[in-house]
Image 1 (cartoon, rainbow, N blue to C red):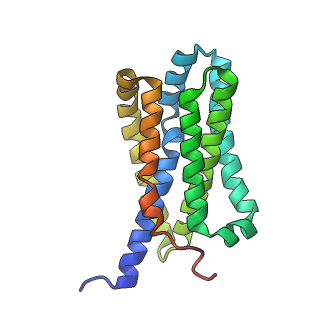
Image 2: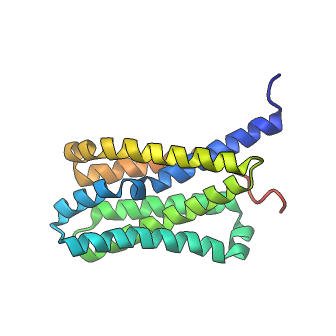
Length: 193
């Protein structure tokens, strides 16, 4: 028997959340590639590479925790708008990275990228937790996220060699743009709201 319309909608919502979260987690899941590219481009010391990683991961923490500690704001805007805002901030941060000419702007751009990714991932996790079979959906999300990270580690290095760091971050922006259409499938808010 064919799946009911609500069941199919639930599947589309889950897949949209998985895609959103995996694309915004791509940078952190492939951090060794990005750090290598940035270290070569900016002639970074090991300590500076660590600061760049900290800026990315710290930004993700700020974006995620910001959503968790601001339920009124998230509720008033709705999940969909927060996801769109997260993607916009993520893209902005990556585009700023393509323009960074020194270490300080690089750190700032990576923190901005992380904040956007953290916001989008927080919404992805919230949508997954709200699903009918959240344990299954979270397992699918984790496998997809790890799979895209593994593929990214393999492909992004050669892409960076071919296109340079600016091209690499422009491709990441393009992939993030691909997360926009699935956001239209996301629920506006928690199903009990």
